[in-house]
Image (cartoon, rainbow, N blue to C red; front, side, top):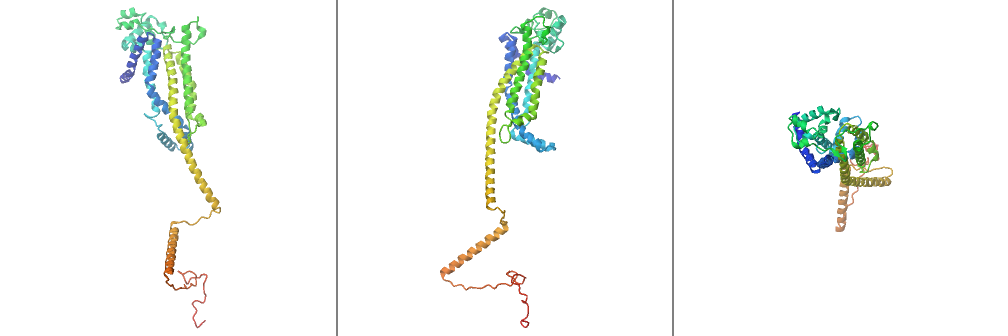
Amino acid sequence: MFLAFQIADIIRVPFGYILDWLYQFTTNYGVSLILFAIIVRLVLIPINAKSKKSMMKMSRLQPRIQEIKDKYPNDQQKQQEAINKLQHEEGATMGCGGCLWSLVPLFIMLPLYHVVRQPIQYMLHESADAAAAIVDLVKNSNPEYFSSNDFYDQLVAASHLKEFAEAIRAAGIEVSQRTLEGLNFSFLNIDLNQIPNWKIWTWTEFSWNALGGLLIPLLSASSQMVQMWLSQRSNNSLVTNEKGLEDKEAAQQSQSAQTTKMMLWMMPIMSLWIGFTVPAALSLYWFVGGLVSMIENHFMTKHYRKVYDAEDAARQERYLEQLAIEEEKERIRAEKRAANPDGITENTSKKKLQQKQKAEDEAARAAAKKEYEVKRGIAEEETVEKQTLSGIPERPYCKGRAYDPNRYNSTEDK
């Protein structure tokens, strides 16, 4: 556990100093929190870019992955081997170059979440023991300031540091003078330290502070819904088949699309519920982060779409070339069928062809020799080859067309 905290502080402490510097520069916690959310998203751009590229690549492969599943419905091993091979060929494998990048921002955002909810420790740079002592003092003095969720007690106590400065000194808690001056959590006359109340009917009187606290979680959940809808739309438009053409049906029926549809409603609802259980500062942080994420998503999608459009164009060109080759082969086969409708084919075995070629060569040499002798005036006696009885020179005595039953009779009998 100690090692885990040390690793988390590698992220928390530097970003705590950044948030503190932004607060001192702007003298407004709301503005500093907005700038902090923007800086965090900018720092995460390289990782988010890899995550976006991986998700878009996986979306493009959905039709071919489904074809593999249909091809091997009852063989999970072959199915997985074929899918892994496809992902490897397309550069969409798991690991540092794959979907693992989508989890990296989560591991970074969780420590940053602690920076926002523990301002005494990370913004004012007090020790964990001093922060806990301040929280206990303020809570014992005015418990009505706090909600039943003690997870955000440090954020609540930070807004009352100036009020309890003398009590903190009297208790002997060693803190800096800047810590005793406290933090100003007012933003546009909205107390970011408050936990929003969605029960409008319980309001005794209308106030901009209460209305602003209500709007911030609503805006945060709405921005998340819009962000997921845009992401789903951009990913679906990239789903292409083996021909490089957009496959809308496969995009709608893919498992990832079904999961995204479910998350499209679940995540905003969860965000809305959490927004009414945590201080408004955290909802503001999520809202700004969501807006920056939408802008990032737009430019990343535009960039990678150019890359993938080029790949689709190359795939379409290869498909058309292959189609032209197949059409040419079919045309040649059609011509052969038209020239030989009965399907009679000549024996073209290697041995027969060699014998035929040998006979043709011997005939050509004999003809050339005869022509040469004629030109030289050399007389050639005509020889009459005796016809065998069977008609087969190699088998003169077999029964054949020239079979003579009296062949072996004696002369006296004749």
